[in-house]
Amino acid sequence: MVGYKVLLTLAIAINGICFIAAMPSAQDIGNLMTLQLFEIPSTLANETDPNGLPLFDIRYDAMPSHCKTNSSSPVPKNCAEATACTRRSGYYFIKMNAFSSNSFLVECDAHTEGGDWTVIQRRFDGSESFFRTWDQYRQGFGEIEGEYFIGLDKIYALTNLDGRQELMIQFERSDLLTSYAKYSSFAIGNETERFVLKRVGRYTGTAGDSLLAHVGARFSTMDRDNGSTNPNMAITFSSAWWYNNNRISDLNGLYGKIDNRGLLWTGYYVNGRYIKTVKMMVRRYRV
Image (cartoon, rainbow, N blue to C red; front, side, top):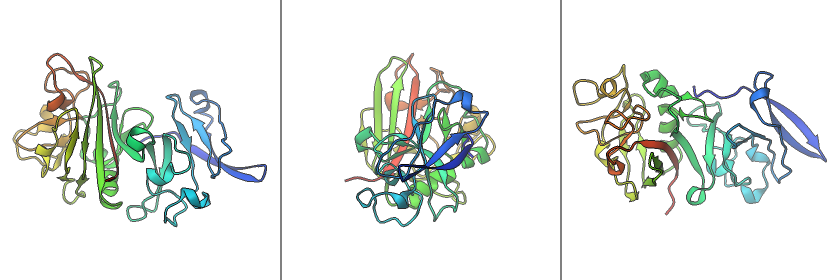
C-alpha cells in the first residue's frame, strides 16, 4: 500500500455546519502545519502538508447538487467528483466500488488543462527507490506527498472501471526545459494479464511519443520477467516497466543518471541531460 500519514476523523460543528476534520496523530504533529477549516458549501476538512498541498476529507453525498454528478456513493469515485466543489489540487480519498470496498488516498491535480487528474506516479529528487518487486509495484509504494507509485492494481481500476481515460505525463529536464506527452486512451490489463499495456491512443504534446512502441508489452520487475527479451531488462536497468524488444521509454529507472539506466523518454532525450521531474496522471477522456 502507498504510505501516508495515519489520520483520525473528528466531527466538528461550527455554526450548524458539520465538518469532518482529518487530525494528525501525535507523531505527525511536528511534521504538519496547523489544521485549518474552510467554510465552503460542502462537508470537508483541510490540513496542509509540508509540500503545500491540502488534505481534504470529502463527504460527496453531502455536497450541494450543483457540485454533484449522478453518483450515490458517500465517497467520491474519482478526482472529478472529489474536486467538484473545492476546485483545488490536493489529497483526497476516493472509492471505486467495482474495485474495492475500501477508499484510498490519491493526489488530485485540479489545474492542469482543466483538472480532474489523478496522479499515478511522481519522481523529483531520487529519495525513493523504484527498483522494486512485483508485489510492491502491484500494491504501490512511497509517500503520496513525495515520490511514489500508486500501484498497478489501482491503475488497472482507474483505467478500466471509470470509462475511457487519458494519460498526461509532465517532464522537467536537468536544464529546466519542461515538456509533456498526452495520450487519448490509456489502459492496462489486470494482474492475470500481467498488467499488459493495452492501449495509449493518440499522442499529442512536446516531448515526443515514446510510449506507443510499448503497447502490447507486459509489465516486468526485478523478480518477474514478463518481457520478450533476455536478460530481464528490469534487472539490467534497475527499474520496472512495460518492456518488449525495444526500450523507448522507462520512467522508473535510476534517478539522476544521464546514461541509458536513468529515467528514459527517447523523444525528450538530450545528451548530457537527465529527466529531473516526471509526473504521470490519468483522468476521464475529454473531447
